[in-house]
Length: 447
Length: 101
Image 1 (spheres, rainbow over the protein chains, first blue to last red):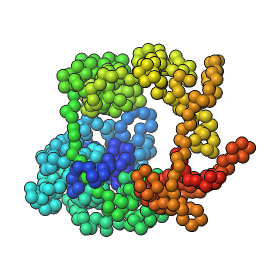
Image 2 (cartoon, rainbow over the protein chains, first blue to last red):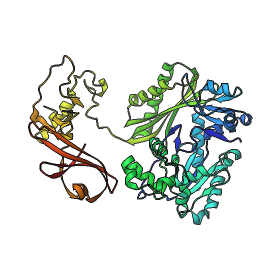
Image 3 (spheres, chains in turn blue, brown):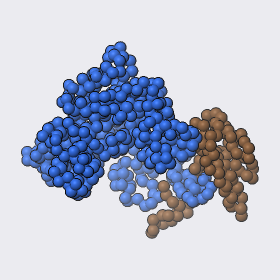
Image 4 (cartoon, rainbow over the protein chains, first blue to last red):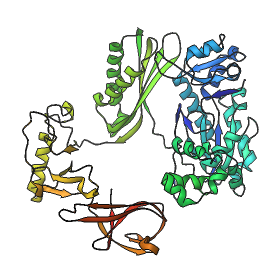
């Protein structure tokens, strides 16, 4: 298995987007001791397991999405040797390495492999928290009596992976163990395949001191500014006074300092996964027309919403997957602003996503999955009535500053009950005033 | 958010009664222990006394001298708990206030 590289090897990256892992205060329940199991370039490695004949060639995985200017997402070491880099345009990459094999991403396959990885590690500890594909934190508090010393815990984690992944994939896995997710992640990023990095509590500050500031799970702008100020390592950061960092970066500056000093321990929190609702539909002949896919989407949503398992819950997260003609898959997902059980409210954002990034080939099978749920609520919001001026009409028929009829009704009801109208709106009075209290004011809805 | 007087063209303009307006972000009186040069050192907030770690910025606002004069010396402070607050001293009444921006 060749060494692989991807666009941002160190920072906490989830599906091409750099974002900090969820942070929790130490007062919340969870496991303090964290084991980070990380398979870099997870997706490309899975492709190479599927097509071992590509192992000795230059291979690159295309970034998810459709467009005329597609870029590379992950590149094999042989490709990197030829100058091919993640983020390059296809044309650039081919000119650098004419023998480069380009692969279309198969997100459904990657998600399924990630699920298997999570399930396998759950046998080791009940406290398992995924942080993007191929990177999982395992809580190890109280596991010494069951699994032995930390080094044995690492071997057990790798043994668990052997149950679901072939040997080359497990051999490429990096493991780090430390107090808190940040320490464990940095340890895993510094580890080499087959050589885990285990950091004890007493060694954590000195271990972190030599790390670059780019490992901090903070806004990249802060990292960039620190680097420009010459603060390149966590040791340098830890030597700065706290008020100065808070003054420059606000609360993020304080967090960064605590991480740099090894004082902030973010525990691993157990994953709560509601069982998803999945429905699928096979097309008699592969469907390429958007109208046909939209029709199928509506039918699938109806079917999924009527499932008994959905009753009593609204839908917060929905995923649309497709198996493509000639192999491969496509998927897109949405997290709805408000949980809903209305078909149209789920279909609209899915269609919008599909319009931005449509399936690259005709679809053989379409599947809908609800994976996040909200509370059951039949209460109607003030602004979403189907009357004129409500959300249904997008407020298009209203004059600026006019009150929707549904809201006027609500004000009337409240006035009857309370004797006065308690609803106000914020109006700009003198937005550029140097006196802050002159800039905005509250105005009664009826005024 | 609507802007007064920015109603859509053609729509009949409605005069607003100034008495219907309630100011937002009005400053709250604040007890402050001062240090050298009249600079704030401790703030007596709802949650208790908070030490001022750093003064980020100081500026003065003098306005409306033609009617009720306003003269305030503002300071943006970092407190010991990491919060950033804006306070000012009314230079006419010599009182301190907490100002929401």
